Length: 580
Image (tube, rainbow, N blue to C red; front, side, top):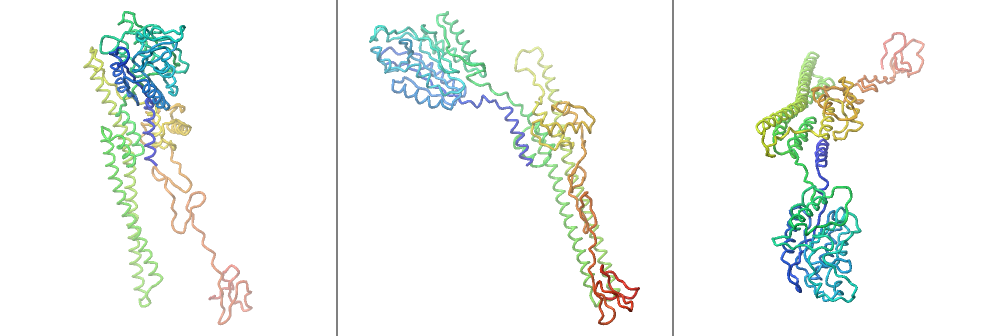
């Protein structure tokens, strides 16, 4: 039970420190098409796709699918299959690099084997951007499509129009996503074209890799920085543009990494909590969760001390048990000797035998009493070891804090005037509110004021415990909150503060309640005291007066004044000798 309580407290710490964003499932589909079969190839799309795919893998995406130079059949297939992977995803991203065209206000992604002999072939040889958007509908927090396809349309001159009024635009058309939490980022705004770039990657992809995976940063900010950088590097010829909207919450492509946990500060709190309970099971549990470090070594030392005290207690209990057994055996022997005295012994011999047996019984009783005292002393040593562990823990934690503070001050003096961020001195470990609450609950339990759980929740039981402490320690701490001042005050009390209240049938023995045991012939009455059992009423017996004459209870005495027994079994009848 105690082990489970400590494991629960440690589990509660993990929940407090955990960043919920880390549980998000993030999936990405990366498509790059360079090797077009009917028009000149593009040098950068596959390299750009490689750069974006590597970025998402480094950012810890759960799924990163990389596809290259897909024909129309495969292009439709991978988009369809990816839509299944978004069903349980929180964040879903599709990046496409290649050719894209706009026909009658609708945007299309062009497959590697597209011929596009006429405008009627668009439905068969390309995939509409609307279809790509639908593939992300199931994602819960963010749907992002990045289209790096705003290039000159190489099919526009050769594509025949089946309907004269059908328009084939330059670049891509403006789009307004209808689903929530959806963004569509174009390498260039609607109606404009993007530069494929002369380097390893396009200007657009270089800026994307630089900014969009910054942990914890709302996606709208890095996309804005991408726009600014591309505008600056292209002399304002190319302006990336984002369509769609997000809500008021921060939506980051990569979650903020959790703050590094100060393991020693964590261990110091758990060490002090373990010391308030002080059992070997709790110390073992502490070492399981903190197997190395300063406090792990202290915990092992406490286990050794407690093991020695418990071993001494066990040995004393064995001695006590044996002594009590010997005393009981002597008492039984004496009883039998009294009942079964040998007829061949003289009265003097019988008396000597009884006196010897009584002497041995008294000696056995003394040994039993001495063994009981030794067992009590050993038990007190175990309790003292636990109390000392609590005091040692408080002292050791305070000493560690002072040492950390002194080290920080020394480093601060040595690093004055330096601008290197790595030279900033570490601060002494700070205890959080959850730690204050749990420690205050544990110390209130130690001083006898808290009968509830040490669970980190400041509930009615905890408030009543602090109120009881205020009453007995003559303090006035606000019971509505677990404050550091209250913790310091309770920590400073080495002994019990609140009186020990035992349940019915128990009595106080030192710092604990023990069951009341009554001696033979006594019983525990309703007031909790041992009371002598009443003697049973004597059984009525038949009285005789002379040979052959018997008087039954209730019979009148004879006229001669002979004795008899009344209805209660008492002798009656004028002082005559009465026999049964």
